[in-house]
Image (cartoon, rainbow, N blue to C red; front, side, top):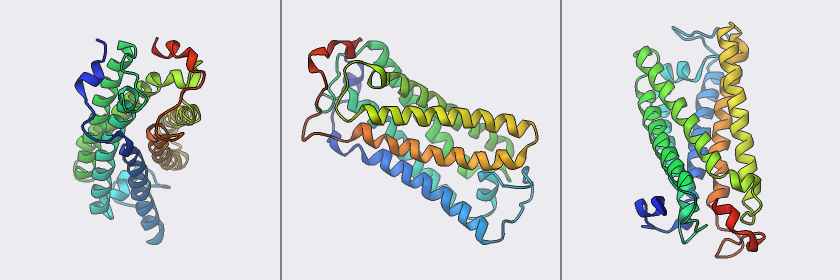
Length: 252
């Protein structure tokens, strides 16, 4: 099982450009949300046919009736770059030309593969979700929404687990810990927000749940962008390890 990741994915291009994936993913998603929200506010905050929330429309409601082409393009761009982000953030860990943990624990490398598959599931679901909108294909849209959030949840949890040694471990790469802590905090905030959203929605507090959905999705754009910190070279041309004489615990 040693080197399971690197045997599967070789350095077929420069790892030093992989930071573009999370940057673009965060930007595309933030831009897509903002265009939809500004458009809704600009036309007088209308209520759409079939809109469940009488106060604040869900993202799917706006996307089904206004600027649907923009939503599709935004979801395609976000989905592709998100899959690239999941690949990048795990590949740099095992790539000899980056962090170089080629002999990392087998369970971590297997977990990275699970995160990549979950990321692909979320990406494909998001793209098709934008095509089959809640107005014309409500059931299919709902199923794809579950697939998107399920894939995002699994990829977030598994990625956090793989990089947890940089949050809490004794040996860390210079400049990386603060990004891992920030990313983990965003994962926690999204989990709490998602749970609160479900509780509020099923309790009939539509106004609060509608606002929380927009907050949750905007948090997602910052979560995506935070992976730039994982995939950027620091301290010159090679990553430097703090307390380099204690490298072994990192590989446990």
